[in-house]
Image (cartoon, rainbow, N blue to C red):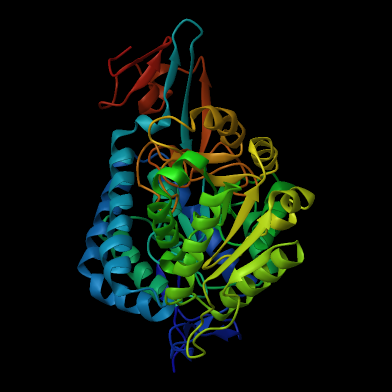
Amino acid sequence: MSTQPLLINGTWRESTGAETFQAVNPATKQTMPDEFPVSPWSEVEETLKAADVAFTTIRSWPGERFAAFLESYANIIEARTDSIVDLAHQETGLPVEPRLKNVELPRKTNQLRLAAAAARDGSWVNATIDTAAGIRSQLAPIGPVAVFGPNNFPLAFNSIAGGDFAAAVAAGNPVIAKGHSSHPGTTRLLAEAAHEAAQATDMPPGFVQLIYRTSHQDGAKLVSHRLLGASGYTGSRHAGLVLKEAADRVGKPIYLELSSINPVFILPGALLERGDALAEEFSTSCLMGAGQFCTNPGIVVLKAGTEADQFVDAVSAAFAKATPGTLLSGGVEQNFRAGLVALQRAGAEVLTGNEPADSGRFCYANTLLKVTGDKFLENPHGLQEEAFGNASLFVIASDEDQLARISEQFEGNLTGCFYTETKGKDDALYDRLAPIIRQRVGRLLNDKMPTGVAVSPAMNHGGPFPATGHPGFTAVGIPAAITRFAMLQCYDNVRPHRLPPALQDRNPGDMWRRIDGSWTQSDV
């Protein structure tokens, strides 16, 4: 048994900490052989100091330097696909194919290359020039960024390879990655690839660093440290809010993805037109990956009637028939059960599931719950408890007025979805409900389940609290995601030769700039 090293200031080295932990294979409940260190504060502070030195070196570098690193990194990851995917499978129980090898890893390398293209182009800096006033401004790197990755995407959202990492690097910042305890070995393999890419592209030693775990107290000290520029966090609401409180206390930006139940409204005309097909589509979406997606459809709102009853019965049968997926860890299983208990205490009735399944792995039965619209309106907060896993709650409204009142009670979510009849029978009701939900979700969908998150420039993977910590930013979608890790820098009457390249009269490339109110690629 060996304790794995940390990556600090360009060197793989042993931790000085006394505590260690091990990952557990959720598909077998067997402890993995490698031990990983819990870093004391002294090591966390070392990473901050090294990142600060690195930032002093790179803060005025052109985007091409960061693009070269990101592309090199993507190439190295692809060359090591089999070893990375195999270990991720062991640590998470997620299937090698298609999930890890054919979906998540290509998504990751695509994100890195899209971030590279944005860094190279430079238009993301939003260069703005007012020639009459002699004032010019642009977005610029904010400083060292700490990234806290989640448990459910060991590749696409990994702290040292995922979307937050790619966005922070594209903006020109060093990154301190805090690995997730569920897949530390996978994170180590990715960090090895990142370190190799950093060396190949002549990045300074503190440009990419990795620590595996800290105490909660030291995590709070990290996000609030004077040398840190910003943080990105994906995980539980409780832990995220602890970090947010620490960062807010000293004015440090922190971008959070916390929890979301992603309401789906299936309107009466759609149920009448294609209820059976929608029952199958919903069941597939909700049970995919054992429901362990931040965009999993955790609540479905229906208007009472025969078609709604038939839909509920069809989904209940599908849930009961489907083999439950493997949950990511014992902690996920425990929290999932607690979420189901909370929903029942709030008034929900269990239709199927809600019992242990397959004791040889972390697993729980596919669970479907139901509540009347009256009950929901009596306790809307309690009935929006997130049960992160293979479960969903049906809310059955008595009429259209109650559908509207239910809509008004939703907290902030990543997504909201409406299914309507294709020939327009539901349009009037949609026009009444959609504006209400629009203000409560980051992404509004029509006739499409929310589970997938496309890597598109137009994507918003964000939303009002508690889905995230701020409704104005997205964690997915280049170049918008990059701006989270930037600061606005203004130059007033600064001599032309002292301006950064993006703000000089001559366009340094083909970037888009706003000059005297017009977007252009031309020189001043």
